Length: 186
Image (cartoon, rainbow, N blue to C red):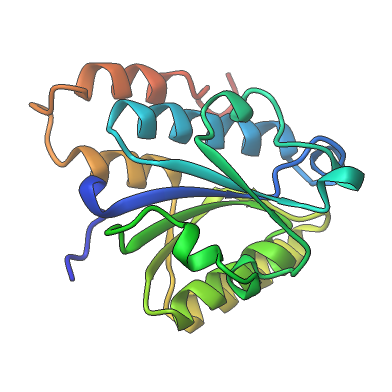
């Protein structure tokens, strides 16, 4: 298995970034913006973008603008989407790497990551596109995912790995998405 993320082997999974949940998440606006950049880049690179919705009747649907990029949404009640009957089979076939964003990092995201790893999939958790209500919970989730074997990446790491080189035909468009991110202090 290559050390880098391969666009042809990847799926982007957005876990429970829902209308009534995200406002409670520390740093939610930046996490949604980061996940949106990833989702738009994934579409440019023909990477499937899928989402889960935990108790959508109570927590609402996937937040805008992410909803526009999502190909399919899987309704769930288990904290780990991987424990839902049919979820792993529902993921796009022949793609063995799952890039994960979402909330809450220490509950549904981490449990989904652990479940996908148990299914033999390669999983990368996007540090700047996951969140929890409390930063300590997010930090513990990242440590737990890494200890279990998940890769911990940033959105920019994932984007440049998906591209592979600056001569990729979508490089200019993806670079424009990367540049949407404001530099610290700007």
